[in-house]
Every structure is written in C-alpha cells, then in structure tokens.
Amino acid sequence: MKAIILAGGQGTRFWPLSSEDKPKQFLNLISNDSMLQETYQRFRDWMPAGKVFVVTTEKYLPLVVKQLPELQDCQIILEPDQRDTAPCIALTAMHFLNQKDDEVLVMAPSDQYIGNGQVFHKALTLAETVAEQNNSIVTLGIQPTGPETGYGYIKANKKTPFSFSAYQVEEFIEKPDLKKAEELISDENVFWNSGIFVWKPSTIAYNFSKHQPELWKIINDNQTKLQEVYSLLPKVSIDYAILEKAENVFTVPVNFEWDDIGSWTSLGRIHSSDHNYNYLIGDVMSALSKNCIVYSERKTLLIGVEDLIVASTDEGILVCHKSKEQTIKKFLNKENIPKNNFKDK
Image (tube, rainbow, N blue to C red; front, side, top):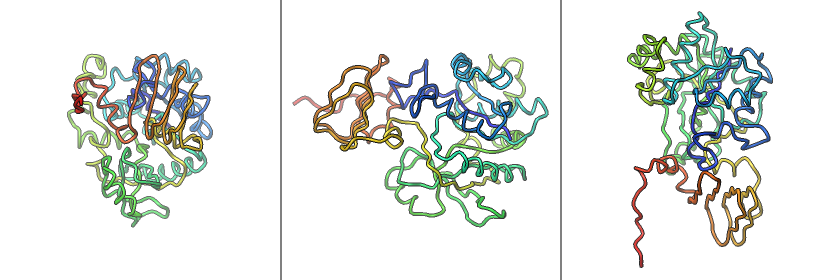
C-alpha cells in the first residue's frame, strides 16, 4: 500500500502558536521534529521512500519541501485551495486513477501522536486485507481512555466476517457533549474515530460517484483547470460527505497510545506536568496555580488561577478556560465573537 499524509490544514485550535503562515503540522510540538516529519518517519520505518506521499496546498509547498527534502516532486499532490478533507481525498484518488494505479491507500493526518509504530503497522496490514475487498472502507478505531468531547466516535458490530478483528461500522457519531461521551465509552462496541482511512482509489471513486456525484464530476471534468473551479467546491469533511453514507465500512480496533494533537490540552496529555498539574513552556513561573497549560515567548508569571490555557506569541495572546477550548476555532472568525455578557458592577 501507499501512505498519503494529509498536510493542508490550518490548525486554528492551536492559535496563536499555529498560524495561517505556519500551521501546527509544521511545528515541533512533541519532539525535535515537526508533526509532519514525525508522521513521515512513522511510515518510513517500514515503507519504501517512494510509497509515501504528501497532500498539501500550494501555500504550504515551501514548508513541505524544506521539512521533507527527500520527497520527489511526484510525491507531493497539490490542492489549489483548502476545501476540507472530502475534496482533498477525491483529488488524491483521481491523481492515482489517472495513472492506472489502484493500490490501497492509507490516508493519515499529519498531526497525530502514535506511541507504538509496530502495532500501527500491524493494524494497517490487517486493514489493507479488508480494503482489497468489495469496495470496503477501513478506519482504525482507538480504544477510548476517557470521555473526550473533541473526538468523533465509531459504533461497531463485533460480529465479523474476517478471521481477525475487523468489525462492521454501524454508526459514526459526531463530537458529543460530556454526558453523551460518558455514555459512549461505557459501550465496548464504541471506539474513537482516528481519522485514519484505508481504501483503494477505485473505492473512493465509487463512493464519490454514488454519494457526492456533483463534487466528483466537477473534479473529473475540470482536471486541466482545477485552479479555476476548486475554490467553488463545498467545504465538507470526508466523514459527512462519504463515511456516514457508505456501505461496507469497517473498523480495525487498535490499542496503542494515540492522540489527535489538535488542541492545547493534547500537549498536557502527551507531556509530563509539574506537581500542580501545570504544563509550562517557555520562561514561565507559576504560584498558587494548578491544571494550567502555558506557552509563552516572553517572561510570564501565573498566580492563583486554575484550568486555564494561556498562550502568547508574536501572532497574539490567548487566555481561555479549558472547558471552552473547542470554541477557539469558532471565535477566531470575528463575526462569531459574542458580545461581552458580563455587566459592569
């Protein structure tokens, strides 16, 4: 199979560290390497160099080339614009089908932490076996460790036609509230949706033709002028566009350390904190404070606060209660910023 690393997102929930000019996949968040470099090496540990591809936008091409100089030009697939994961995946499938290449593709985000590369490799090998059959789509299902509200969930039927653990997906569940998340993780048939998908280009084409015919037709009919039409495509995720509608969707459960490094609190889960459960990066001092995440590029003093995310860079300053972290992306759109609900006393 081939690995397709999706590296065109903006990572707005990591603002102000992640910016439009240099989003989180190009940052060193969990090691001395960037998230993109970590993801690339995870595949290269067992996959030939020529089998690993990166999909990104033209805007981020210089960053990809700088961080992965070993990539050949033919291993970089360019999107003319950012239109979410469905158009991106359709474009990628078309790229390989035009070359008469229908080898199984594993499509993975560029910004995840995976603790055991060998278990990851084994799971993908099983997923490849399923993906070879009957236009099947396979996702890796993560064993939940808590009621996360920032992840999507998968409900599976554990009756399997295979000789190994690969279960039919009954339902994809959008990011739940805390009460629903607690209910979901009590069900042994429920997994976190890793966002890692394994399928053939022809399977992608089949499902887009069936469930998103207009989007597929626009890409197919305008391959020589994608620059002109791509921005007209809907911004839609692959989950909503295809996976929630498709038949023959399976999940291979995996049990390794995993985190979708999508927000500030994920850093607190990956890295160790101090005795007051504060995770502090930079020249930061804290007193009488606990359970905070602070990233600062200037001298910072934290006194008497709890459960805060504080981030300060040249891009801006964020002060956010941890319980409101999932709203950062929404509020970065100035039109969505609510009026101050607190009245002066």
